[in-house]
Length: 527
Image (cartoon, rainbow, N blue to C red; front, side, top):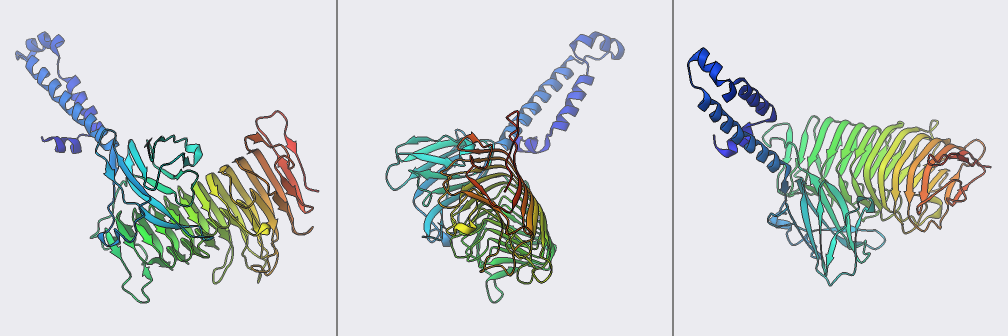
């Protein structure tokens, strides 16, 4: 048996079986009785089996270690080596003690206010990876890696840093406080399986540049039941259209580059998007309307165009979003009722383990659009948990809010929970806003109201000079039933609206502060 064959074939269960066999063979201590019964010397058989099992055990351990230490990098297509590169940084990675591997630094546009060139790299790994970053334009006085909660402490030496990762992360590396020309590093988990390119139910985009063949040349139409695989090193230049389909998977490690929209999901069911990167779409990163059972995970997104929202949902339900990085020049995540040709309520959302960076507008925006031809829509049962908010910049004071619920168009928004949310200092805006809205630009009528909103373990470190707002429109359009549990601002546990710089209006009721770390709960109600 050669070494590679042994590494593939020996499993832990097989090892247990072999060890069991060994136990059934007599050892030297029982040799005499065995010889008496069988009249055969067996000592050499036992020794041989023990040596064989020892070799197999060592091979198995080495295989486990090898599988635990993997590093996969993806060279860019030759056609884009110069056109998509940003030379602000040189980035290399390696397994501990291994050979450094150079990564390709992609250029990404950020911040619509004044679009800037930032950098992005990606790779897959398991085990431990060492990272080297060189800033190519002068020395650095300081460096910060965000989110701060990851507590990654790089070693700075002149214009270079090194650090180690032991699990997949999405991070921003910022030299001298520069968040507009920073390095975004996406360390993915290793893919557990890849589809067969020859499978007729697979749409396969291998390494290289891909453009649509069908006119008008801006979209790939994805049939029902297909798996779309975008391999690492692939560049797809066209949106993926899922229209009236079901059971579609869009997976991989590659990039959708500068599409009209990244992925469009219309009147569809059971659509999954996992692992890909969408760079600088002209409009939404993922646009979904009138659809249900949508799953989005390990998505990375950049945008710097007008109306280039991240994930926008119109009348969609049963949506799961996990482990995404959204840096967008409009709302990172927006949940609405009716808009355009899409009708229906919006129910049952789970958004977890997300990094939201709104260069423009809101990290989270809920409730603006609905159906005024009837009695509005119901937007309910939304969970946002373990979220990092890295930026918020909304120029309109009436619409600000990192966590914004703005119920318009006769919508009723209820049962929304924000938990374990960490908010960095931001450019312009408010920590939160809960309001019954009537915007001339967007709404034909105000919302019905907002009910049962829970904030737990919210931590904000920033200036907090623009007060948060909680208020309805009138006595028939209320905000009611808002609870804060363990709200901290700049490390201080907040016990009332004044301490939190929260303005509660006349038409807000039952605003409660419930601090589990104190013996008594503090309660503050609207007027």
